[in-house]
Image (cartoon, rainbow, N blue to C red):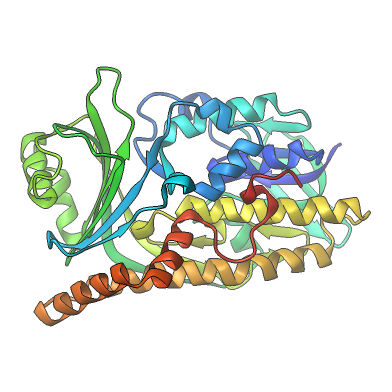
Length: 406
C-alpha cells in the first residue's frame, strides 16, 4: 500500500495548487480526481475567467506556477463600481508603486499552468482520472480505496472537490446554504475600445453585470470576460437569444463604454448560491476552497478565498511537521480552523450583504446606494480597507501570500 503525508480529493484550481505548495515544502501528497485532465485542458472546456488577487498571485509565483503564466494574465489596475449607469462611481486605484490589484486569467490558462507545475513537482503524485470508492478516517490515519482496486494511506485527508463535496457530506459537517434565484451567464467578448485594464462592476436590480479585462487576442483585438447576472426565470430566454440580440443587450447594459461588442466564445451559465460550512476540519480532515465555502461572484473572491485556504493550511502543516507533529494532528487542524474560519466568514457575509443591498429595487434605495458609493470614494481609510480586501491582504497573512517560502 502506497503511503503519503496528505491525500487530496479534488484536482481543480485549489486542489492542484495545494498539492504543488505542499510538494515544494517536501510534504508528500497525492491528488485524486475523477476528471480526465486531457478533456479539462481541451479548448472550450471552461470558458470562464478568474481574477487572481495580488496576494494569491505572489503565492503562485513563489511555488513556481507564476512563471508558467507569464504574459497570460491581464493586470487589473482599476476597479470601477457603479449603480447602473450612474456617473457616481467608486474607483479602486492603487498607488503607482503598489502594483496591480490582481490579474485576470482565462481558466484554461490557469489549468494548463497548474497541470504542468503539478506534473513537474517532485513528491507530488497525480491519480487522474481516478475515483475513490471507499474512504476511512480514524485516529490512526486515512485509507482510501480507489475504483481500480488500489488502496492508499495517509495521515491527513483534504476535501477539495468543490461545492458538492462528498467528503464534507460524509463527515456530517453542517452547511448553511441558500440560493439567490439568480443565474450567472458567462461569455468572452471582443470590443471596439480598449478596456484600459479596468474591471467594471455595474449593479442592476436583476443583479451585477461585470466586465473583466483580458489580454488582447492574437489578432490584437480588445477582449473582456462578461459575468452577467439575471433572474433565474429570465435566464432561459436570455441564453436562447441569437448572438446579435445578445450583443445588443450587452452593449445597452455597458452604456457604450467599450463600443461595439462581438461574442467570441459560447455562452455558459450556472446558478448562484451561498454556502458556508459550520467547521472546516474533522478527524484527520481539512476542507479547502468551495468544499468549505461558496460565495456570490460579486467581488471576484471565490478562487481567492480558496487560495487563502491553501496558503494557511500549507503553513500550518509545514511548521507542525518541522516540530515533529503528524500532519493530521488535532492541534494543527485546530490552528487551521481558527485561522481561516473568521476570515472566510467575513468575506462571505460581506459579499452576501452587497448582493442584497444592490438588489433592493426603487428610487430611495438607489439614491442611498449612490450616496454611499460617493461617501466611500471620499473616505480614504474605508476605501483602503476595501482595496486591501480586493488584494486578499486582510487579516494575518500566511507567508506564501507575502511571497515568502515557509
